[in-house]
Amino acid sequence: MNNEPDLPPSHDEARRNFLKQSSLLTAVALVPAPVVQAATAELDERVAAAIEKVPLKLEINGKKYKLDVEPRTTLLDLLREQLNLTGTKKGCDYGQCGACTVHVDGQRVNSCLSFAVMHDGKKITTIEGLADGDKLHPMQAAFVKHDGFQCGYCTPGQIMSAVACVREGHADSEAEIREYMSGNICRCGAYTNIVAAIQEVKNGGQKV
Image: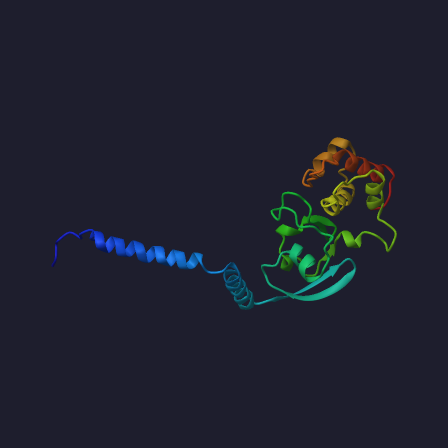
């Protein structure tokens, strides 16, 4: 049995190892970006192909759908990428801004945090489903009247939450509205006008 301690590599060996590693890193760095992107895309496609799709039935804005979706697909991505319902916006994608708010069986949901397969057999309403043809929903009309938007990016989620806020009975005061709309962020700062729009719908007794 050899009890001699392991000796550190000689100077020449250490230098050769260093040069090999440096050459490898240099070669990787010189690979064109399109090649790296293509390889990454191919890997993503292989992973997607390996995931078995799940049958899913949904009623979205009054229309029934039979779909096959990957279990990892969020409700937001299903709506936007597969069904082209792009009114629902992808903001933070972490459930913190409210831009992706939709209604599931009448309850507001952050669709970026919700897997599509969780809602089999349920009724989904997006911003596209609020209006009755060319006739705006009362909340949409109130947002226009009170200028409840500026850039407009957060507006679909704001309106969906506003409708739910009234339905839930949480619009009895300005403070209550602000509390129950706090999950929807407006980076332009149109909060005062948004509150005014919700109050008009609530006080007008309009069906939402």
